Image (tube, rainbow, N blue to C red; front, side, top):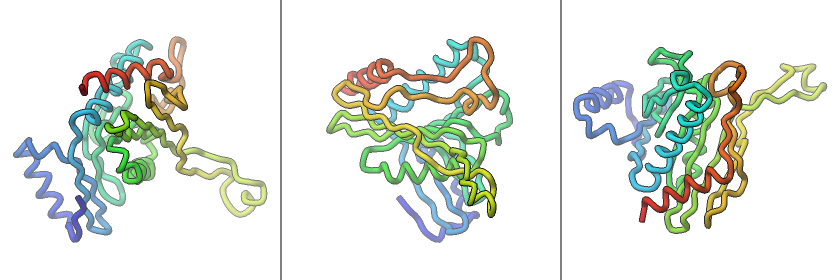
Length: 232
């Protein structure tokens, strides 16, 4: 749902009401302060909600297996304030080196139905452009009718400019890019594996026993099969 002419005073009142009436916390907020636009998304239950929650558990298990039980944690649906407004994700994660409540996450999950994929892509742009701390946004687009889970991984990528461009601008350009796309349908994960760069997740280089977080085709297929089995 989209609301126009929403002032920052309105937003402050909404947050105050949500703090008092906990049942209203089932709504995710995105607010664009320059445009005075409020976008509300109902928290997803059923298959979509289960999908990102179970994936978050799988992500935490992988970090624990690397000996990083206390080095990485989930922040849930915390609200973050950017230059152009504020937003909540379905789920957020950050390394323990960023302990302050106001510190931004490095990994963000946004989930919706297949019909809302374009909206989810807009969400990924907001996160990656609002803070340089956000390194990976993973989108979940669910089609229950097709029993299909579509994943998109978005990141900011640094690319070298051509020699001709460097004469008039910086030697590199940072651009928003979809770095992976996976479809899990009929029990097969096309486009796997899914890889999270360790340094982007933890904001430091890996040491011995640590490395990129990789979700193999078999792991993604088991995850999807578990989601659909629980939904029956």
